[in-house]
Length: 280
Image (cartoon, rainbow, N blue to C red; front, side, top):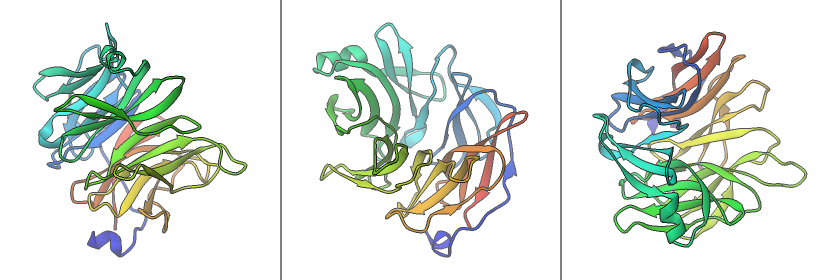
C-alpha cells in the first residue's frame, strides 16, 4: 500500500451519521459503497464511510456483530430456538442458517455460545468464537462441506477474529497472562501451520483488530493513553501508531477497500458517531 508505506499521520475525521445508542460492530463493504453496523441489537446498512441514509436489515435480531462477505452478503449471529444461529443474509432481507448450536452438538462440540463471525476473502469459510468444553476458542466452518474444526486451545478466552486478505492468517485478541500482566492482546494464527504469534504485549485493552487490504497493517482499538484510540501497527508488530487522539472512545475500525481510509465508531456526548480518517 503506497500511502501507508510513507507512514501514517493523524488525520481529522469526517463526521457522518451519529447519535447511535449502542454501536457494537462496524464493517466496510468490499465494493466500497456501504458500511454495515450493529446498533441496539439490529443490523443496519448505510452509505460509506459515515453510514448516511441508513436502513435496518434485521428486526428483533438481538445481535452484536455483523460482517460482510464477498458479493455483498453478510453474516451475523442471533439467539434462536436452537440457542444461537449463524445466518447468511442479504441486503434485500433474504437469509438462511449456516450453523446452529444443535449442529455443533451433533458434530461433537458441546457449545453454549456462538459469536463473532468473520468471513474469509473467498467467502468459503467463516471463523467464529464458541464457548465449549469449558473454554472459549476459535473455530472454522467450511461452508460447502459444513465441517467445523477447532482452531485454538489457549489458557484464556479469545475474541474478534479477522482474516488476512490471502485467507491464510487470522488476527484476534486473547486474554491470558503474559509475564505479570493480564490484558487483551493481539495475536495472529497461521491457519496452515496452527502457530500463534503474539503481536502486542502490554497491560492495555487492545480490541477488534482488522487487517488492511494489502495485509501489511492491522488497525485496532487501544486504551494505551486512557481514552481508547484507533491504533495501527505493521503485520510483524512494528511501527505502532495512533491514528486518532481525542477524549472519546474510538472503536471498531474497518478499512476502506483501497486502504486509504479507516472508518470507526466514536462514542461522544450525543451517542456514537461513525467517522472516517485518511491513512496518510
